[in-house]
Image 1 (cartoon, one colour):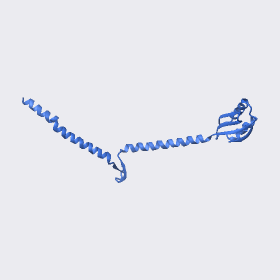
Image 2 (cartoon, one colour; image 1 turned 90 degrees about the vertical axis):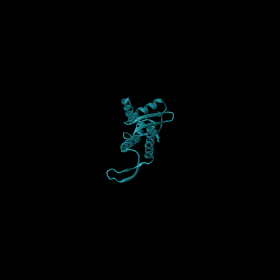
Image 3 (cartoon, helix red, strand yellow; image 1 turned 90 degrees about the horizontal axis):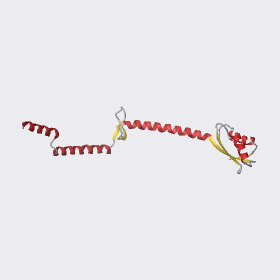
Image 4 (tube, one colour; image 1 turned 135 degrees about the horizontal axis):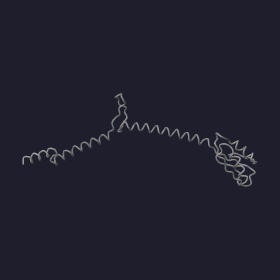
Length: 163
């Protein structure tokens, strides 16, 4: 019987009697939750590294986020540079529309297309005998409008105007 009583007292000591401890535990949990909410609402002022002085910036994020922000800024700068390079590449590609005379059939169209496509840097040529136009897309670093006009003339057709 004494052994049972000592086990009961020991378990009561270890586990508590329930209701009164739950009330204390609940009030402590409420205090912790309230403190956490206050911390979220009132951001702490950052201290500059090593100086111990207040920088005036408000932040609730740890310094790890700052490193990720730096990485994100770097990534955005790299993307911006790649976009500028792509714009420069696309700026070199030009399309010109040339008004011609003398085309009367699809054979004429094919003759002009083959002459113009032989030029280096020409990406696409569309010749239309119905409207007497030639549209050429080309790399401005490899060829120019004068070379395209010359190819059309060499094919036996007259150049009227360039748009």
